[in-house]
Image (cartoon, rainbow, N blue to C red; front, side, top):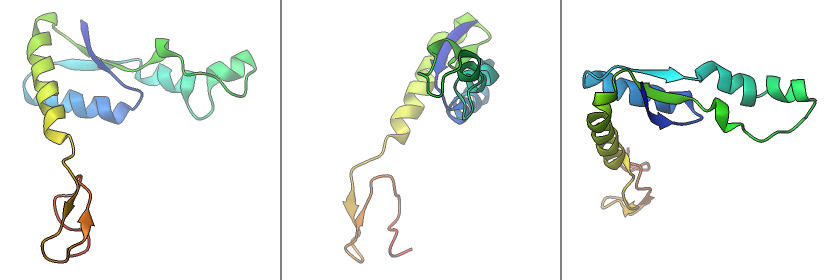
Length: 112
């Protein structure tokens, strides 16, 4: 078992896990439930300690782990390539209506 990624949002780890599964790489999420107990909306840890506010505890951070250590290099290459492909581009002007469109949009929000 080897950690390949960590993130407080389980949806991000779920997406990464699906990408790796598509490449035939087995992985699992560690600390998925304990993160919410320690850092969720109503923190169990904060209640135990009698605190209203608390810092997020990195010990409970959800982690994406590989089932096989030897898959690490391939998994890292796949996830790095995916991240590079979803990095938003520059903002652009629509040639049809002239509206400024954020780089995260593929089509004009005003014309479509």
